[in-house]
Length: 349
Image (cartoon, rainbow, N blue to C red; front, side):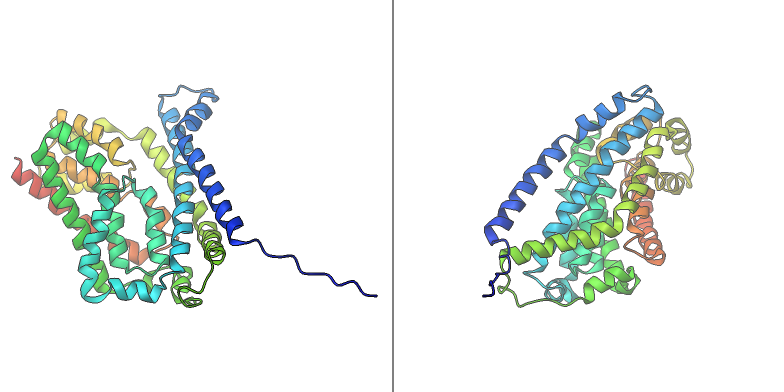
């Protein structure tokens, strides 16, 4: 007599939801220990903690797991969200006449997300993979590191409400206008092919048909697909940022920005692009440069270029964007930052 065997039953929804809850708990624990971990790891090395090399290594050991954790969480969340809203529906909600509103909303969202440029990249990738218009995603990518409550709070405390409010207005203006201009060019074809394949992928079953277990699996698949493709670019970008963070010559920067010449603003932007810091990290440098006589608009243009156009950010974005699209992004945002620098020097002369 033959024995009948049943196929193993797939895990139920409660198992998947419980797994996600456990995973989020582990994620939160890991994220909360990033600073202690980086300090502990550096303490094991035979070098001075506050030396240039010590600062660079501590920065690297903190930022690599931070950005990878953020990328994993955001891509998973966007993967689940995509099961409710297909790329086509998302694009239809934000495209056309609503795109300007989408740029403004994305820029405002950036204010309440205190990320450095590399930390904002995970959300950018999530937005792009979910089919949000490219110009809208760029508005977020520009605003998140450049205009947030950390930057505004420090500017208010150090330089007064007039400077903070003016910076807010100009920063949002750069993010909204630059994103809108990029959106009008319709440059989605300049994304990397694997991103276009995500856009062109099947929308899947109709909304409301999927179970939560299937939605969670879709999120995990998005993590495998996207994080698996970009993690080494992230590490390379942060390594470059760590070296710059530890060895940037502050005195040389102050001497250039302190000169009363028209080219000081573009020079400050060109110097700022290869550097890397978040708003909280760069504002003390801004205060030091101003104390050495640098012009306000020149220094703020430098700050904007460091936070919104950092070289490590470009390295990470290269896995998602073509070189041509990165060049357009840098040119448009750079032009906006130059305008802000000149206007600040004019208004606060």
